[in-house]
Amino acid sequence: MHDHDSCIRAALSHAESHCAREGVQLTPVRRRVLEILLEEHRALGAYEILDRLRDEGLGGQPPVVYRALDFLIRAGLVHRIETLNAFAACAHAGEGHVPVFLICRQCRHVIETPAPAGGQLERAAEGAGFAIETTVREAEGLCADCRTAA
Amino acid sequence: MHDHDSCIRAALSHAESHCAREGVQLTPVRRRVLEILLEEHRALGAYEILDRLRDEGLGGQPPVVYRALDFLIRAGLVHRIETLNAFAACAHAGEGHVPVFLICRQCRHVIETPAPAGGQLERAAEGAGFAIETTVREAEGLCADCRTAA
DNA sequence: GGTGTTCTGTTATAATATAACTCATCCAGG
DNA sequence: CCTGGATGAGTTATATTATAACAGAACACC
Image 1 (tube, chains in turn orange, cyan, purple, blue):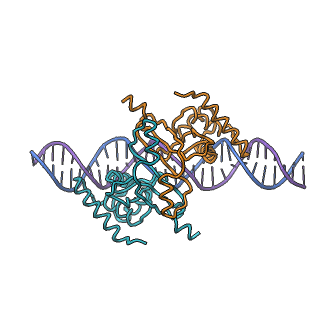
Image 2: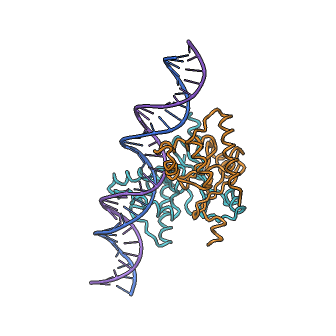
Image 3: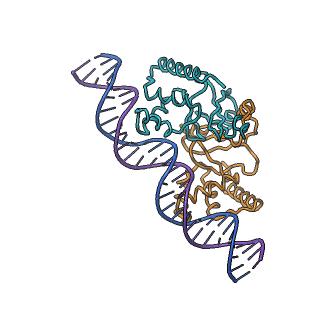
């Protein structure tokens, strides 16, 4: 069990200083999208996020959410989970990591573990003369809690 | 440059013997979907495949393609490329591999390299008590040919 | 010759994502 | 000031990807 409140505060304060440093704006919509993802601590679909924003009177249409997510992803504050077509707040913002995701198919919680570069993907690419730009490493299965519950 | 015809023939004959062994049917639609993917040697979207089928008078609606793809994926003859929401014929059918994909963002060719199990994903999962069921390892970038061309 | 199973056909719709254009805001340079 | 560029948000419409649900054909087995 981790201290969720302080983890959210830390992530938000990292986001703020990151944006200040880069000279980009953490606008209300962008900030709120990040907060929603941090509060949930799991992967949310774009339209789930949109529903929340609507409830709060912020941005009522899909492009608003997708733009905010684009921004947050470019800033390294949010990751896209390809397996789920969903999005999760980065759990290791600013640590310069290669993200590896363990996705529970039951509770949809996403465990992000920072990994060193130089895994199979990099070795495979080197052998093929392939220039990697982005990588995706995701596993789907059952998390420890859901295994215990079962 | 590889011998594409013989590679297609080999893959089809593997598919046939696999289906015979498992007692499942490689029906015309399923076979044709596999052939289309083998001929292209790159990732195709479900609707691109559907268009081809339609041209040939086979299965005119999305579920037909998605069902064929489900079958082929379950049989290990086709892989889903999550990054692209697309599908590619397996280049190493029957070799019992953990697929790793290098996806060229320019020509959309997919290089599939067979990797041993036991990479970062497995190590991360072990540490977290997470039971892996499926894994995704994909890299996007530029292939050797497109790099040379640029 | 029915009966169960497997596969296909079809209609409809859900879920995810983006194009294209408008308007508001802000702020730097004149 | 005020103006012109840049940035971000609002909005409409639509593209793309995927599935639910049910009807019918084919075949295999008893």
